[in-house]
Length: 276
Image 1: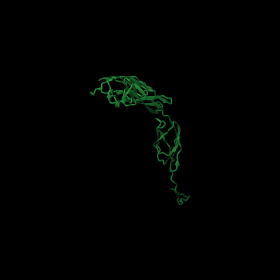
Image 2: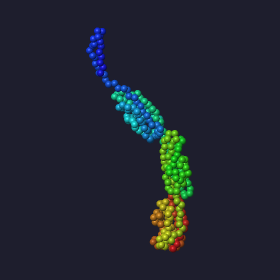
Image 3: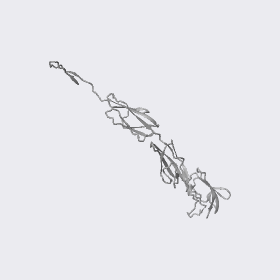
Image 4: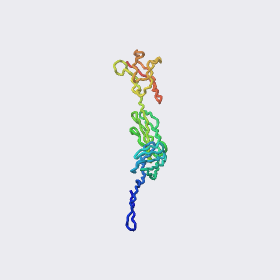
């Protein structure tokens, strides 16, 4: 409330005039910060502000608007340059607009390459690639069996089936991505050339351990007349016991043909001997 009194030349005061003024509010000040250390597409970006006493936030994010109260995260799905602006208000008083520019960097496209098959003793090259063209740092995990874990295309010599993950990071933007590749170790296929199905529980069946790695392999056995006397697709579960139609076959050699049905189209043929 404002009061006003006047006095004449003789020192006599007037009546007091009174008036009530509306509340006066200070104009709010808009401010915000964007965490720009690693800004990548499809990664959350943190918005903060030290402004206080605000009852309305009006954002232009460069790809849409909003009224979010900071702190909050926003994700940009496409790389590019975005003009950001903010206006705030309090009790109807509007601030000046503040602006900033946000550069959103692309995430690299990482391809660890096709799955590989490795023979014992022979390394395979992991034919990975990364785009777009830039300067990247590389990290393969696990490092076991690699000639280097920090190059794009290392040589791999694992002793067992191994899934390797490649992480590529842009050294300037620090945007990164990963991809996996499986290196499957193909065991040496050792095929015994004899067995003794004599009922002593020792070497009574023609066991080929390596075929457990090839579930689709087909094994066929022929007698001297060219008759198929044994055929199996799931050989480890049903190895040959030296019989044909339940009858023990005589001592001697039999022709075998083994088709692994693998990607390398491996095929084996030879003789196996029954010893009684």
